[in-house]
Amino acid sequence: MKLNHLIVGTCVSTACALSAWAMDADYWDPSEKKTKSVQGCVGVSAATRSLSAGWYSVEGEGIIIDGTLALTGDANLILADSATLTVNGGIAGEGCNLTVW
Image 1 (cartoon, one colour):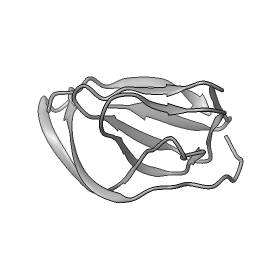
Image 2 (tube, one colour; image 1 turned 60 degrees about the vertical axis):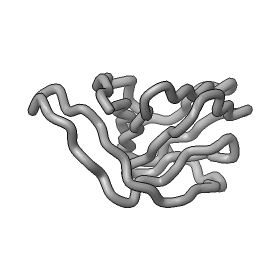
Image 3 (cartoon, one colour; image 1 turned 135 degrees about the vertical axis):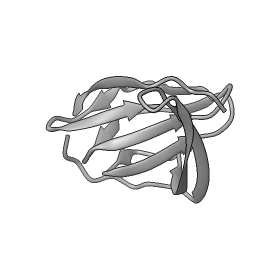
């Protein structure tokens, strides 16, 4: 899969429940001009409420998080081909980064 890299912003510190599972995911690294793989990414679902430091993956269309998504560390979010993620309450936090691949 080919994905674009985008620095979304700087972010947070709040603890919330995370409903997730582990998966492998690929992303496009534009600085190295090649596809890379990450093993053990945490899957993001509608029940996800926070992202701590680590790697996360969104698979599939129409994932909607009702409420705020809190960042509690530097997180990497891989959007798979055709994946969509809507966060109705916005993304909150300070002092960390969210990188979307």
